Length: 487
Image 1 (cartoon, rainbow, N blue to C red):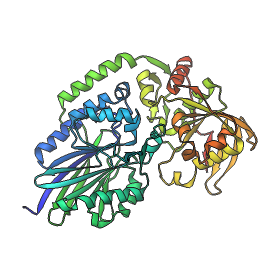
Image 2 (image 1 turned 120 degrees about the vertical axis):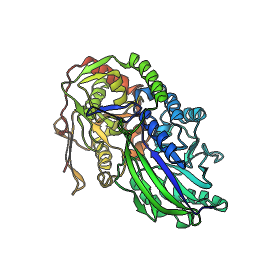
Image 3 (image 1 turned 180 degrees about the horizontal axis):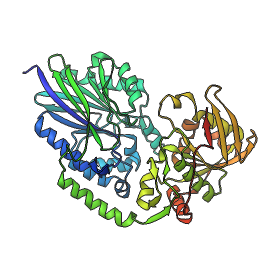
Image 4 (image 1 turned 30 degrees about the horizontal axis):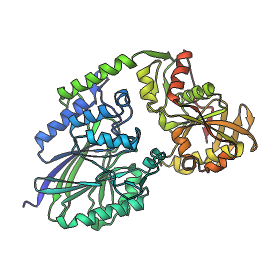
C-alpha cells in the first residue's frame, strides 16, 4: 500500500441555523446552498474528502425553531456531512426529541459523553471509523459540560464533564481500536478552543490523536494551534466560511506527514450554488415569512448586543421588559440568550424570534442583599475576563454596580439610587435554565435561596412577555453603560 496519502478534511461548527446567504457590500456571502456547492466542488476535485460538523447545527434562525430542528435535519441531509458531533444546542428541544431527530438524520451523529445513569448505556455511538482510499480514519465526539445544564430536568441522563474524564474516555476508545491499525484519529469536540488546548495537553501521545476539530467558542483563527503535537482548529460560526485541512497522512507511522489549513470564505465569486438545496430553503422561508413577517415595534435606533460579558443596550431592554411586565424588583437576563449583535430599528416577529430564540419560563426568587452581592461577584470572577465561557447577566433598570477587578469587589452596589444593605430582600427574576442551574451559575445553594421563600413561576413564556411589551411600547431606546461598570 502507498505510504503517503492525501486526506482533505472540510469542517464547520456552530452553524446555528445560518441557512440563508446575506448581501454584504453587494456580494452574496454564506448560506448552506453555496456551502453545499463548495463542498461538492472539493469532493469532485479531491476524492479523499470528508466533511464534518463540530456541533450546534440548531438554534439561531426561525426556520430551525419553527420546526424544532426537523427542518435543520432535512437541510443537513442534503448537505450530507460524513460525520457530526453534538453541540450543547442540539439538546435545546429535549433529549427525547434529539433522539427522534437522530432517526431523521441520514448521516452519523457521534457523542462519547451522554449515557443513561441506570445502566450506563450510551445514547449515541461514541465514535465512527471511516474507510477511504484504504485509510481508516477514527472520529470521536466530545461535548461541552454545558449539556448537563441543558438536561437538568432529565434525571436519568448522565455524562462525564471535565477534561480528565474526557481524556480517559478518548484513551479507552483509542486503545480499543489500535489493533485494527487506525491511520488517522480526529477528535470532533464542542468544548471551546481554550478547552481543546487543555484536552490536547492531557492526552497520551500513544493514543495517536492527530487533529482536534472544535466548536462552541465561535473562534476564528489564522492558523492551527499545536499542543502535544496535536493540531487544533475551529471555523468561527455560521456558514460564511468553512475550514479546510489538506493533510498528507503517513500510513506507516499513522501520523501527519504534512498539512495546509485555511479558512475558506463562502461567497458567490468562489462557490457554485446547490440549486436543489436553495429550493428547499426557499420553501421553508416562504412558510415562515407568512407567519413571522409582521412588525412588532420600531425602536428609536438600532440597539446592539456586541458581546455577552458586558452590559448591552439590547440585553438591558429585554431585561426591562421582563421586570416591568412581571412585577419584579430585578431581572437578571442571561446574556447568552440574546443571539444577535444588533436589532432594529424596525423589528419583525422573525427578527425578535431569531434574536431571542429561547422561550422558557421565568422564576421569581427572593434574594437578600448579601446573597445578591455574592451571586454577582461570582458572575464577574477573574476567569470571565480571561476568556473562559461563563454565564453572564444583563441587569434591569434600578440595579447599579461598579466592580473593581483589582479589589475583586463592588465599590458601588445600589438599587434605585440607594446602597444595597445585606438585609434588603429583592424579588429577582431568572429564566428557567438559570434557575435550574442556580448553584452552578451563581455559586449559591438553592436551599439558601428557598429559606427566603418558595420560588415560583411568574411566566411560562419569557419571549411572549417581551413580544407583548415591545408591541405596546413603540420608539423604545436604551443606552448601555450605567448599570454594570467594570474598572
